[in-house]
Length: 296
Ligand SMILES: Cc1cc2nc3c(=O)[nH]c(=O)nc-3n(C[C@H](O)[C@H](O)[C@H](O)COP(=O)(O)OP(=O)(O)OC[C@H]3O[C@@H](n4cnc5c(N)ncnc54)[C@H](O)[C@@H]3O)c2cc1C
Image (cartoon, rainbow, N blue to C red; front, side, top):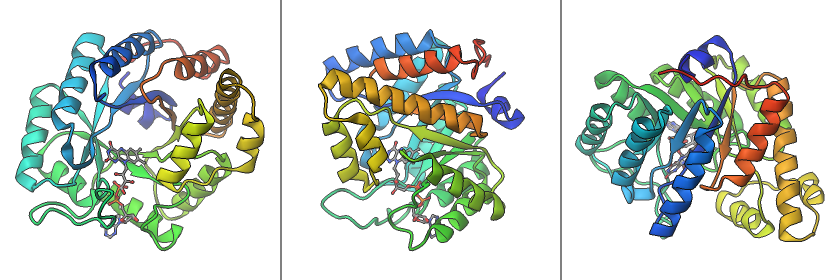
């Protein structure tokens, strides 16, 4: 069963996000992590795309290698930042030639020095435009992003939900969430989305916290609210203790999400194996995911 058919059938998926590293040591860590993850029968892995296409070729190479050598369904992310339509067409053609069937279609963010997003003059203003373009000319299974706490550019959560619905109408077939630490925000978002007519599967993006400095950085970068209950749970112990508590918190989050019908759980790994492996094994031991590899 492919991960798409699992999602369609309402069978929850377990997946992982990676990023192309910036240096040789990072690649060694990534390959070791991928080796460990591949033994856990992932439903799919996704690979991020650098702002402005800085690691464009690395994303394409990495997903091709994951599919070819590890036989795992992989989902490259693609953003509109800095790309003309023709450049996007070229990237999509390369991905299809490499045997890639899935795509995470995103707008991307403006560079840090210029916080407002300006589309390429011959490019796309929104992920929905990219999705429409992909649907018209290519045969990809398309995912998109959603934000349980709302995207920072949206004036109101309802507006964000309407644009998510638009992404569905343009041809996206599933959506993966921004990380969040309070499951109630996910459940409330899902209820509102369902009422608004969103029917595609909503996958929950979960970050296992591995250190307080990481958490602080994420809070600053994403504007993500850090709930007091997470801070209390993590405590102020040693790094090792914080990591243990972070894994326990994320496992609890995943368990509750799956018990309440989340379409899947997508673990933000930061290319590290420890937390992702521990959480996956715990969830499998509890019977959430049958140990059976998805076939392509
Ligand atoms: C799961 C996930 C993976 C990600 N991976 C990457 C990555 O690999 N690389 C990277 O650079 N960034 C990545 N991001 C970050 C993402 O690029 C940013 O959050 C970006 O600001 C928004 O991207 P989007 O695709 O959600 O944009 P959009 O869907 O275009 O939404 C952006 C804003 O515009 C509004 N909007 C949407 N459509 C329209 C429309 N048609 N007309 C008017 N307004 C509209 C929305 O409500 C929202 O406020 C990821 C985010 C998530 C949640």
